[in-house]
Length: 330
Image (tube, rainbow, N blue to C red):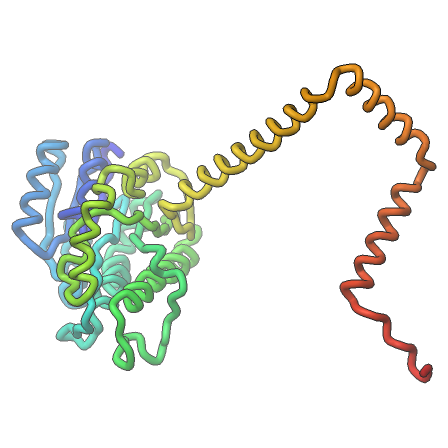
């Protein structure tokens, strides 16, 4: 990552901050976009301590405002002629419906529209810096969600988790279409599910989620300890071109658990079979094997095959049900 410039949103805490600090440690120059100046300054100090004299920069903007997002996008595009990676990570969940001054529902504006507007503002810089990459943080909360194009602002019915899931689905659909449009330019687009991590996420949610999340936080992983963003630096540094792919933290865990279950099952079955074989005296085992061989040789050629075909035919008839009489026959 040495000499590369990375623009990141949502990088002043949690998984975003953990990712940019690790990337800076690999030699990348970090440009962060933040709303809170105090937290941005704190992150800048950490970046300077981790990787000094690389020229890290920060920009202040409220990404729930499309005007602010366009403005900061133009400022970054003007000051950073080369952008190797854009990380769209800012997001939030709100239990109650809120509307921005521009008339957008807040979750939709911050979690999805900001990704779209900032990416478009920096698109020319990314194309000019190929090979480049756009990475957007999504979530498995998108599963089961659907988009109502007649009510994208959730004015008819609002539920915090439901609207959050819709915004994450929008991230994935945006990434897929973006990858299609950028095909052949040398810019790849990916999104990922970071897993459930103890961060500031949900602190300003309000309502039921705002009450429950603080109680769950002690049981969650700490950012930088097993979240998918731990693998993000390796993904970027490896230069692998994964277009239109959704990375999930749970994917690897399920695969490992599945392999472990299969191994345990095979070991159990194999152990029982070996135990049964050991229980038979060796001479009896030899006689049994010889008897099996004679039986196989005694069977007429093609007999087993014919038996198998008859069984398959009978099974097919049972599934199809009783045969219907031919027309005209009573």
